[in-house]
Image (cartoon, rainbow, N blue to C red):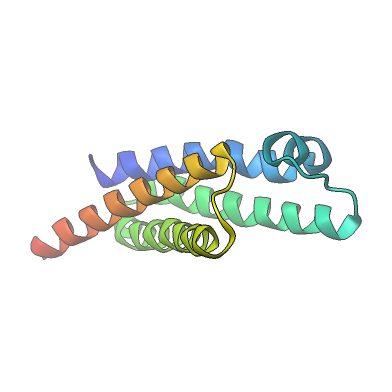
Length: 127
């Protein structure tokens, strides 16, 4: 897999997740995660998460067309996915197993973290 392909796949995969969190959280979060989003503060948090996810996806898409940014983008991808996965693993350890969609997200995050790290290490050998 190339750097460009991984960055595009990660961005395209993250956009629907971002939108599901922030576009209409009172409907989508309740449906996907099984708890109501009822207050302005809750909606605010989910829309902020959406903004963070969309900003990362945009950076990865831009970097996919600019080789000079690809190494930095791979680091951001690795840290983003590994950070999410670490938080989820910690939660599983302390809180128990979450619902299926969140386990799927964990698996995807681990795969993207591993692939980005593999490309970073491979590129390091060629420097």
